[in-house]
Image (cartoon, rainbow, N blue to C red; front, side, top):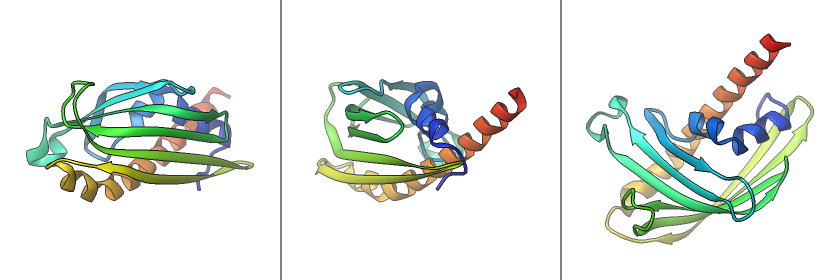
Length: 158
């Protein structure tokens, strides 16, 4: 549940500049964030571990995907896969299908996120799977923080 109208939550999910601000766990940035939220649109994000992650600093975690369904302010469905290298053609270690539904509750929005892992393969997969829940939880927390920031900016502009 977010204390933000659905239009704002939708914008945070569909504007690549905004996605880049919250799409990653804490201590990670997105130097590359290509996010084309339209049916058939591509996703390519490279997450970069910062110094907060100690020995993982400098590690890159790339992912790619494709939007399957985009219903404005209502529903996003996309596939994504964690890659074993920043080369877009590299092997996919984990594939998933993600469905996000946005429910308008006036000045609040309920977001339902459903994730189905469809492929798990390779020697590096164990660490990625173990971090998936923590990563998503931190991402959603960062999304809430970004929505609060966006509302503050909007309030100051009014």
